[in-house]
Image 1 (cartoon, one colour):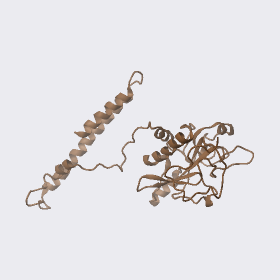
Image 2: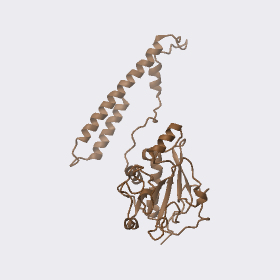
Image 3: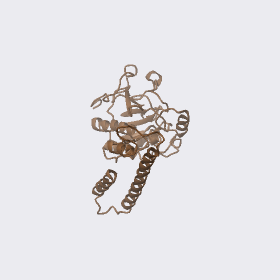
Image 4: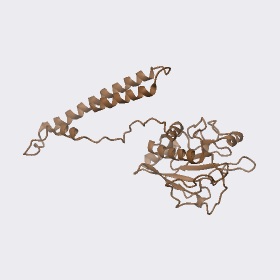
Length: 305
């Protein structure tokens, strides 16, 4: 029966809701189609004439996506081409999501050069993928959309048209249930969202994704003990700091940095050795979960020393 389940995504703004202007067809959603807007801001979609069901806009300060809903979940939206005499696209039980940003490496390079904050979705930060995954998990739980998708997610511009071999036939599209991209839908030519990390997206939605590797943005605050180690040769007691030309100030800082650097290099070598050992293990008969826990405990112990 059409229109079952919650029709508003929790937390999504309805400030740009177009269903009163473009009523759409009532459906029972079983497919999610992902798009990229190829822009850096919330589009106006021609007043809603080409709007999806939802748009996800990055908030870089908060490291989250802000969601805007334009149509109910089980109402057809308007972001796909639908040719006459072919298959249905917008009305084929599809909820459509536009992700603000780009999948085009040329556009990405141009925006980087200009200093524009944006998401290049093939290299999306984990917080952005996680927010998309939360929507997919919600669509799975509340509307039964399977957390599966097509095998091919070629990079743009190969994904444009059918050059990447990813475009579904009419029959495949009619039978499909799950999560796909604009680049998979028949009767359409656009190549978005390109080489988005679909396996990780689904793993995040299922709750099976490993923790992301640290990035350059990750920072670790100094502990009180760290600060004491850095300053131990600088503090003189009742008289305060030594004179600025005292060489012990430079010695204290440079020594601490040197020791920290050497410790980090040792840890890096140990991690590589552990990875090499893990890679060489045959899967048969090995409890990999238990092994992973032991590795995590070993690294935690190393970092604590």
